[in-house]
Length: 261
Image (cartoon, rainbow, N blue to C red; front, top):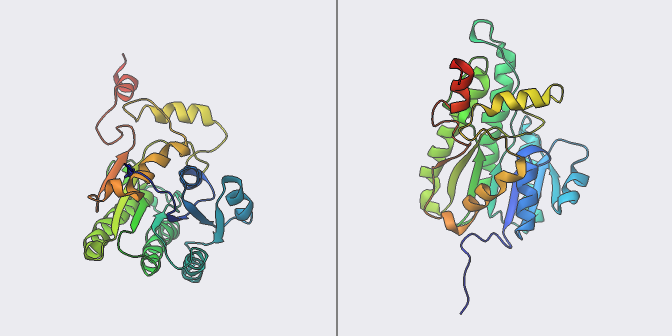
């Protein structure tokens, strides 16, 4: 008797937009090991060698450039033979636009240009190459709802992304294409942290989580695999919190910092 593994992504054509570093690269490596055919995109000149290092292929794509998105999506689909089974939209930026009393609107617009408009176009252009049973997974953030001073641009952009995910799920449901989001917590990536003072910053931010843990990018692989697989076929429009309890409430570590043991 043959047993079918509902969590399998073996043989699936998986495109990871924003896969040359951080969470995207960690997920790409996990997907390759799980048997998927993986293409990663990014802006880096070293993209091909990065992709080869994890057993994937590379297509250049810059979410700040409309032509790059449409051309890159078409090129990736061609490499797959015309069909994308799983589209992961992971690319994003977290540039600091400052507080609202001195908001740098140019930076604010740039964050939205990539995190919202770029993701929206990649979603639109990717759908054209997807069929019934396809899965779209967007990397969002608990920053969309767990608001903090000084990150208005990033938090607002991810709130917009969450609304886009839910709307797309409703609209694409009749076509058999699912749309969900993963909300990672404190992940050690080059986008999130400055190498100078890294250990101190990691220790400080770990107090935001209920577990006190800082995760590595590869640890996000299993949640993304779940949403890419048939195991999650009942899930669409979901915001999957994989953030060690950041959104659950004040952590014990954070309260200890504020009030003492």
